[in-house]
Image (cartoon, rainbow, N blue to C red; front, side):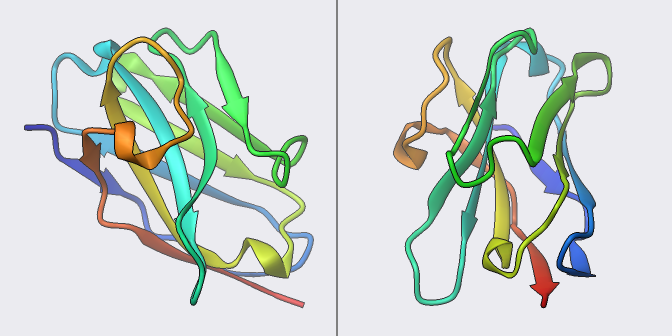
Length: 124
């Protein structure tokens, strides 16, 4: 069992930045693909980004490409999501997730462990 603990989100104005972190309680962090998802009120959960086990491969939703950057530090068992140029439509609860596998998946159903979620609010 892997526990994922996310950092606190926050409230920012449009155009601002936030960085989320996700700390994993496992010594085999490098064996997991890490993903970020979000869910806005009244909407389904959607894929945001994913990063491969060694950090070389990344994938982004079109809606965040060029604004968000995913990264990881395997020595610290932590994944990060740097969010720049935030827009009101980025307002959501953000979740990190871990997948015991090789491929970067955009389907949340293919992730094995989930964080508790953290609220990000962007005001106009």
